[in-house]
Each structure stands twice: as C-alpha cells, then as structure tokens.
Image (cartoon, rainbow, N blue to C red):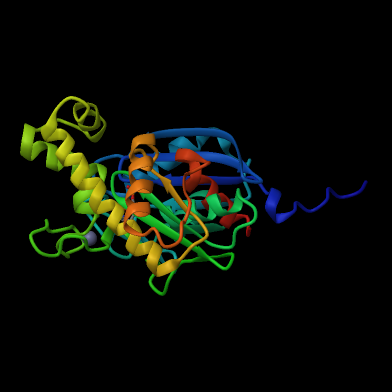
Length: 299
Ligand code: BMX
Ligand code: ZN
C-alpha cells in the first residue's frame, strides 16, 4: 500500500478564528475557501477563559478535521502574546498567552495575527497584479493592515497599520482607550458613533440606526458627515505615508456603499495629485478568518 501523499501546506485544512470586539467567528478553511462557518457574540465578561470556551464550543463539531490553527484577533500580537491597544474595544489582559492556550486546547500549531493585518493579507491574496495594499476596517473599532512589496508588515510590536490610533483631533478630541486624545477610533468607529449619538439623542442608538436617521434628520447627518470627514483625513494620511497600489475597506460600517463613496470622494478632493483606487473588501466580513488561515497554512 502506498502512503497518502503529504498535504501541500496551502491545502491543509485550517481551523480559523476571528476574535473581535463584538463577535467571535470560527471556520474550517481549505486553500483560502471557507467550508463551514459559525459565530457567536463575544462574551462580555472580559475573561479570556470565556472567549476560549466560546471558541472550543464553536469548533466542537470539527474535531480531528484540521491540521493547524489561525487566529485573527482584535488587539496586538507579539511573540504569541495578546494585548489590547484600546481595552474599551476588548479588555484583553496584557500579555495573555493566547497562542500557548490554543495550542494546549486543540493540540495543533497556532498562528496568531492582528485581525486587520489578517484581513489585509487575505485581500492581497485574492487579487493579482498588485504588490502593495492598505486595508482599513471600520467596525467596533478601526483597524488597519499593510502589505508592502508582497509582504505583510506586522511591525516591531505587532502594531503596524494601527489605523484607529492615527490622531485627527489632538486638541478638543475625546480621550481614547489607548491613552491618547483624538484618535480616529474615538471619532468614527461604531463605538464612537454610538457614543456621539448618545450625546445628541440619548442612549440606545447603534451606528446603523444613526445612518438611517441621517437620511431625514439634520443633526444625525452632521454627526455622520463629521465622522466621515475625519476618517477621510486619516485615510489620506495613511495613504500619503504608504503610497499603496490599492486601499481596501472592510468592517460593518466600512462596507456600507455610502461610506465607501464618501471616503473616495474626500480622498479625491483633498489629494487629486495621483489617484489610489479604494475598494470594498472582496471577502467581506470573512477577510480576517481567511487571512488567519492563509498565514497558518504558511502562505
Ligand atoms: C482597535 C484595536 C486594533 C483592532 C481594531 C479593530 C484592540 C483590542 N483593538 O483599534 O488592534 O484591529 O480595534 O478591531 O486594542 P475590531 O474589533 O473592531 O475588528
Ligand atoms: Zn487611540
């Protein structure tokens, strides 16, 4: 009998996770394609053990069907350790050994990466003819990832591309959970829009409802306009710094057609010198999962 051929690294089935401020998603992924997918709301206890338990539960039907684990996480990853840049997005204890815990739990090799960096890698992989890309997610928080000369840039501290903490209102802005004043994340993320809506209309208005209101309510429209203008400026600063072939926008808010159109128009207006295309993430909300799987498969 001949032994089965060794699986090519790219075609190894991978168990992928995406741990965000709002949801934890899990998927079985082969060669960048999602075969099965599940998700739950991120437990709000703030205890990593509860997030880990949710991950075990999500993957319970897939025992023995994966060769490695890729996890895209909100926050910063350095040497397999995980921490928050902004603990109000997810209160990750500093230096949490997530890679070691996942390895001990699932008995498979683990690759950890920031969620937006993972998404940047997936969006780069799915396209041909480009060498660089800036990915920006506008979601619970605002994250970013950079691919330069065909390589994912993780940074000395795992924090490369941390778009959410580009300063847009250092004077008169809000204090961000990262400690600085006036980060774009405190002005234009889903969390920020909810907070700004609460200041004007009272509690309980989530970002999607604020966008709906803005169609008929001038005060809501001003809030949205201000947030998108600041976001456009942050995007332009990042674009100036990196000069990528392409900018890709993802996240629940970033994937809205009206948001993408507005950002394109702001960048075009403020920097007409050379156009950089801005596109929606082709892998939509799954870019982080796919990117983590590709990296875990060594691609
Ligand atoms: C925050 C930061 C980033 C993350 C971004 C988007 C934390 C916990 N997260 O800026 O690392 O990429 O939010 O995160 O500090 P998401 O949860 O909104 O996808
Ligand atoms: Zn910040």
